[in-house]
Length: 376
Image (cartoon, rainbow, N blue to C red; front, top):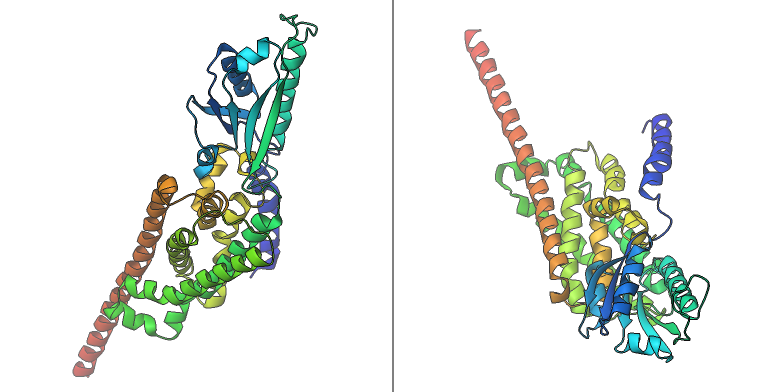
């Protein structure tokens, strides 16, 4: 490794690329859904003022009773506001009333700016209604307060956030270390020649399966420790989560073999782990809130497999979603998995093409040597 070059490259990546990706330090236009059962002029005015805030973007307004938990699936919302019936009537007849707000606490930092913005909006509204300077309403009206509730991780436990994130990160990282050198190892043992003659990409996938099984077992053991020793909130079905893990670990395995395929030896292959594992840990929502990133950064982050893993963790483990609740997310991941499989097949058949080209070259060389031997 030419360290004099690598150390400068690392410095440039950290200071330039990551500073651009992580440039946001607040939740800008975080997704907010409103359940408006009053559907009045007052609530519509509130919705407009909420949407005008730089911290929030109202993505949907629902006028029927809805379970707020389901609105958080697939990261479709960070907060859900609940406007009860007769909110406008209570507002202008002197009766106190509450606006319900549900916060997604899967990352404890992502709602801080929203809480401040909502409190400020209601404080200004109450001040104007009480005849404050500049108010058009000089009558005494009912005070509106926020009644908030933190969902999915109300105790703000690290077992549900950083610790769980590190479990998936380090597990995926060492799984990659174990499989990324598969191609070079097959060449060093000359097993690759046999595979080029008779094998298929399925043989490579079969070699990944034992490692994948160990990784899934390690995930279950780790979550069991966090559940018993710590205070992990496992709201969904373990079987549903394990079903998604069958696809996740095989996807990571196929990407791992593909990235290490051209390395001269397993040691060089291992260094390529940094290309596709840490990116998901940095941008997947466990180290920092997704709401802090620009939209293009969130979209690009799905290049990394660990980003998808954290989606499954938030939806199934934290929010209790079923497979049907995340069908769009899971379908998109299957497309991603198909891309990983195609990449592995392309690597395999490109190697086979080179193998047969080398064999033809060797055959021509032998034939030429035989002709020279006959002439002599």
